[in-house]
Image 1 (cartoon, rainbow, N blue to C red):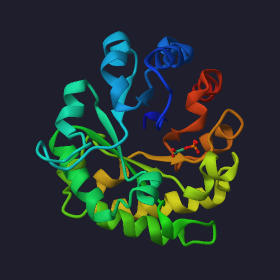
Image 2 (image 1 turned 180 degrees about the vertical axis):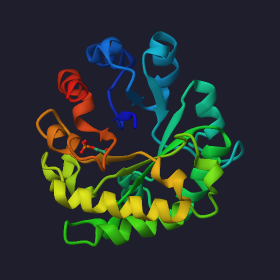
Image 3 (image 1 turned 45 degrees about the vertical axis):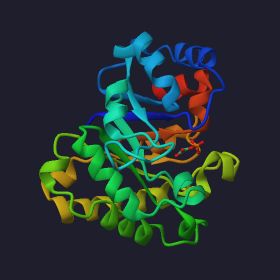
Length: 252
Ligand code: PGA
């Protein structure tokens, strides 16, 4: 299975010139083809970055709406993201669940709209208010979120690497934990539970869905996770804003 490294820039950097600098600092050209790097900048930077650096990595949005057009102030449709040149979209990130009240029902609608627009969703599970501490039953939360987010999504819709799952415990995000990821064994147990759920629902197609880990991945913490066969890569937030750090993660 291929490895995926997703850079989630969140609401950073402050300007397009900073965005160019950040991307250039990654020096992506020498990467093996077995690693797919997906950069998810704020939508406003996507057209310029794609225009400049298009073929050197893949591109994604950090969110999309579920309708194709209409009176939805401030939203972006999956088709618009496609038009900008994005191939991926992050959905269900714990920060959106927490700060914007995104529900699993909303995420399901976004998910199906993204697939219909031929975007590949990177579906985040394990986040939200109910998952605030390591004591929370992350396996049950992740499975419940999967059940709701993938409601009415058929195996044929998610074939051929059209879906990535990211397990990201909110208490392990660098902004909250101060850079401490989830204990590896804990994250692996959740990843196994996610895989069981996927295989039960999607049989062989479920075996092929990449499961990633997100939460305080940096050049120090990536090594431990990289050795775990349960994970096919990382969703990287804070460290993706530091080109040298990000480059070291890629090299690992
Ligand atoms: P972090 O963010 O790497 O800063 O913890 C990860 C994420 O956005 O999922």
